[in-house]
Image (cartoon, rainbow over all chains, first blue to last red; front, side, top):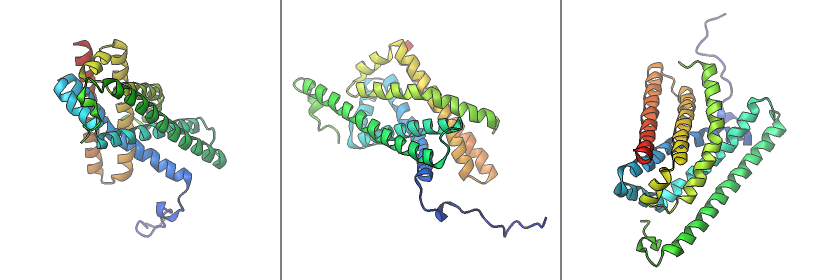
Length: 150
Length: 111
C-alpha cells in the first residue's frame, strides 16, 4: 500500500446528485429534529413560567399568541408531525421492510400527505375552538379583542 | 460514544416509539389549552395524570433529542477537541433544561 493521503478520490457528495425525494426527506428529518430540539426551549419557557406565577405566565401567553409566536407554534407542529411520521418510516425500515426504491418513495409520499393533513387539521381544529371561546369571552373580557398580538 | 453504539441505537428507537403517543397527547392538550390563563393551565397540570404524562414527555423527548443531536454534531464537527467539548456542552444543556422542566411540573402539580 502506498501512503497516499492527499490525492485520494472522494466519493460523490450532495452537490453532485440531482435532488431526490428520498434524500431531501432524509435531510428534512434531520432539520426538523434539530428544530424540535430548539423548540424544547419554548416548552421549558412554558412550564417554568407556569411555575413562576401568573405574571410570568402572561408574558409567555402574550408571546405565544403573537404573530411570531403563532408562526413558531405552526412551524413546531409541522416539524413534530413530519418527524413523527417520517420517524415511523425509519422504524419500519429498521425492521427490513419497504426498503426497495418503489416502496421508499411510496412511504415518502404517504408521510408528506399525513404531515400536511395532520398540520392543517390541528390548526383548523384549534382555530375553531379559539373562535368559539373568543365569541364567548368577548363581552366580559377586553383581552380577547383579537388585537393584543403586537 | 460513551454509551456504546448499540445502546445508543437502541435507546434512540425506544424513546422514538415512546414519544409517539406522548406527542399526540401533548399536541391534543395544547390545542385544548390554547386559551387557558394561568389558573386554567395550572389547574390542568395539577391533575396527576397530566403531570406524570408531562414529565414523561419531557424525559422521553429530551433524551431522544440528546441522542439525535449527538449524531448531528458527530457528523459536522471534525476537530476532536471541539467535538468532545460541544458534545459535553450539549449534554449539559439538555440535562439542565430537562431537569428544570421536570422541577417546574413538580412545583405546579405536587408542591
